Image (cartoon, rainbow, N blue to C red; front, side):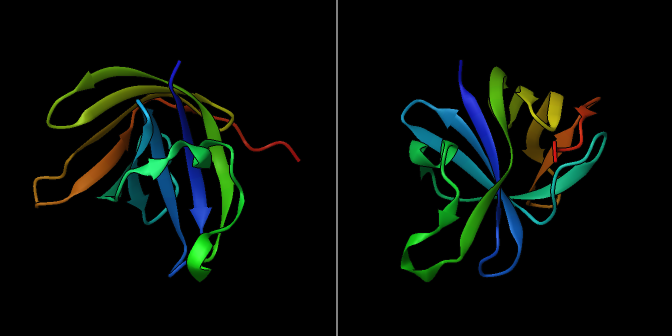
Length: 121
């Protein structure tokens, strides 16, 4: 089953990288804030990343800050076309999500009825 990860990244400013496993790469979007149940967050498309980031936390090469895992789990691809519809099964997020055009020339990550669990201490 494909996996996903959301990495909190502190460079150049704090943001969250939303990465979905798609074949040999991770399709990636940069989020200005972490996803939230029933909400939408601006999602800027980024370049595909190596699958190594599914399990990585630590410094990013080239002095590009540090990444910390915010959430991770499996995903089910439900639809792909103009946008991407998936179902997330992670530690914090569980439920439907969609990356779609926002109507203003950008993209957004829309979380459906997601069951969000606080991280374990």
